[in-house]
Length: 265
Image (cartoon, rainbow, N blue to C red):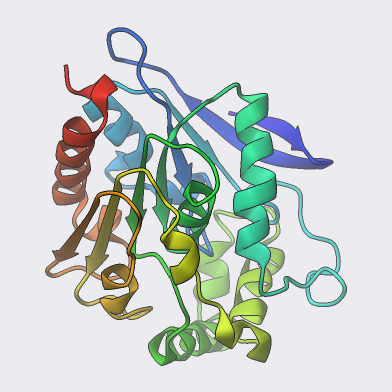
């Protein structure tokens, strides 16, 4: 675990060692809207570590600004409030700089929720070997807004703030940077379906049938220029890697071994 300076901001970065034979692509994990390096783990251990072990690949897990141990966003509810393009900026400005400093070329992106959206946006402009997205958002739906409003109520009046505080140095920055932009009127027109059409790399999109943050349209409407596989998971909500850990790991492993040449051996 360490910190890296990316465009003047200290980001929490964790490296996962290569357990394979020979040169294998790096898996880069992009967390959800309230996630962090720590939130990828559960009582079963680190899922990024388990996936890297299953594929024999090195990995990188990092917390975006304002999450985990990364630098907070000053005045997050004022001048520091996110605009509707905040995920575009993470995909096209921050992530390329992080990869450049780490000397990683053509990674395999593994993104969850907002992180899945960032993965798709990055792959629409930059070369990657594959793009795996879990419960991504390609546009805003009423179900998304309703669930975020519920989360806001739980944060203000329930125990969500206490539960999240274990994973973020500044829990209020982590929560409000996500909640405020998603509930803003300007964000209602957010739509990346056009950008997805420019993705050349193979795409695996997974979503739980019981996801309360989006309908299955979120993966059905991903139409890249290249290969796409869509997988609907039963008895699964918004976090496939937690709700169906083994199934998701095997789905990803099978897809990547089929479509990434360096993993076929």
